[in-house]
Length: 300
Image 1 (tube, helix red, strand yellow):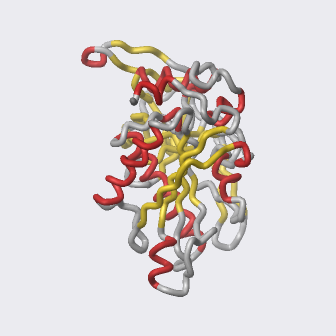
Image 2 (tube, rainbow, N blue to C red):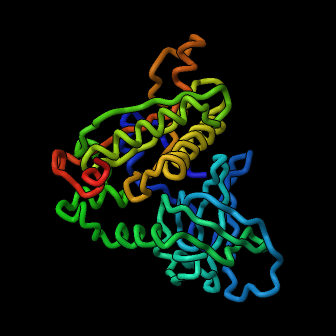
């Protein structure tokens, strides 16, 4: 699980893309005694004969060489390895008969994918990765920075790719907070309705991007709260894309900030309840703020 350092400059960390920290072909973890252990292995190119693993659906939330992290709608995460034999393709058209083979470079953060896996000694290997043709085209536009709605300004294109780390380049057009019960990351019906209203507001804002940041109160240990804040952010991100129709290419990389930047006093129950939240920020690059784009015009 990617760890984030607590900092008052929360949005600087949030805009940066998430990456897995171990090198390609290796798995690293910290034992309870604080000893760093690294297990290295080459991903096999021949995956024939491996037993079937679980099917995984969710969004790509981190990439590091041959490793991909998938965050499921329930907020859980799973790492899978990519082999040279992994089939990556997009589908579309009538009954999904229109298929296009893709490269692993087109798997970027925020993409909705379906992954079939195989059991391997060092984890799960993806035998196939599928996405829709629409998401594949979006990935290509983001990867090459050619989306016509943002091609007029390099800063906006870089923001879509999650590589702009200076929040001062953006104007905040609104922030919506949705709250959670202690230790939970499921959304209430009221929160779901509020998220879709926020997506509709952002859709009507020219050149808008969404930045999703999860938080916790100060109850529980730091590692648990870090994971919980990430799960909350992932749940909101999935809901915005899958239920509210927000396009992945207009979503900055979601992140969890644990107990950082409380909005209320953690010494009271009411304050802790306010801090158990996910903030959805509507951002527009200052360089293009006020310029109409195709997406906002189409929504009117």
